[in-house]
Image (cartoon, rainbow, N blue to C red):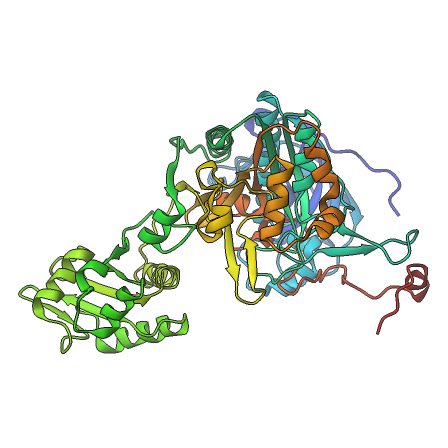
Length: 589
């Protein structure tokens, strides 16, 4: 057991030619060992970089003998005098590549077994193995770079909001279970038998209470928990940058958010973003891009062809329009030569999404052909081509159906074509806001309205009267920030009136008794001078994933869960002792 050792004087990424002649002590892990017969070369690694260390009998016999026993991932301490590398042996890939350190003292602080995979960026190993040995995976330079980027982004966030008058307030992790859309993670109380805490899906109620309490500008980098199905950019526990402001409207929140994003991209990537960002209403986003989180970096914009086919002999078109549906599509430049087989594959694709079929149009040099020519007159085909904006050589793809379903299918087909044709540009940052979402949507499964965002989102003032007459068409004072087709932040102006909040609960099927039971503290607070307020929450994991150009948020979280919500490294969730369950009055059935 090493009880004391020589402490490092420099890191493994610090030494330059200006240090030549200086005696230094380095500590770290053996990255690579090369024994060239009479000379042992070691690349010594820590999170700051790598330094080449040279062991030879003429430097120190004892250190040289010890160096012959070194293996990958041994932890060592080395002392030597910095020298310039011999001409022609420099390594321009390393900041330390012009120097090396001849080792005159060497101490092995700890040995290592052979790692299950190389500690380097380009490795062919499954994610399961990486997560099982996460303590080794985190040594890889790319993973360290990601976590350092995350640290930097957090510091930028704290500095930005502090300069703008926000205070950081920690909210409880053990809270009351409230309906917010996903399943709660529940924590049984040992003291209060049969009762449970919930882990917060967000600090929503607490940050609104802080506004009532007079803390008019709050932020927090906070853990949130949702027991839901997972995917590459979703985790059971995730991190939000949570923000709330009093006496504001939508423009205030959006402007403050843009300020942080502009600063974060400038400080982490050296990229200058132009603000204010583009704004689209939900209706515009759906009708132009078939998505409430559109990616505008490429064309393929959707166009409504309903007017051109309203009296078509093709009944699929005319009957759809007569029933209030939509016929829409988009043009794909230069793809009029797509084969029947390729078009059949696309047809099967849209059918898998719930479409009845796919209509296509080929704009040739001398005519426009469609897949339903026996039902569609030439002049009607020309009218469709005009509505789609096709040019000779282009392919048009059309879908019919109800407004939301048809447009959503086209939005997914649009992204499929982008992937097939490799149209997505690199190093382009397309930020935009989507606003004016529906406040409510009707759930056929539950036979009631559910909140599109959450129950505390305020309706637009001009739509208030429709809460009683036409709730499905009430618009919310809600907004999402979208980056390259991914939602990275979302928020709203909140309800701050107890009567309006009670009406909202009623529309959601939450009766007065249930509302008092679950949200009584909030409704009571609103009776004591609640200010107008609104806020936003950013998905920090997703932001860092996009900045770092990663495909999964698991690569920017130190200790993530798998897609089945397991931690392979420490084998959680796991069974617990019966004694613990007995204390909680819980029995496993």
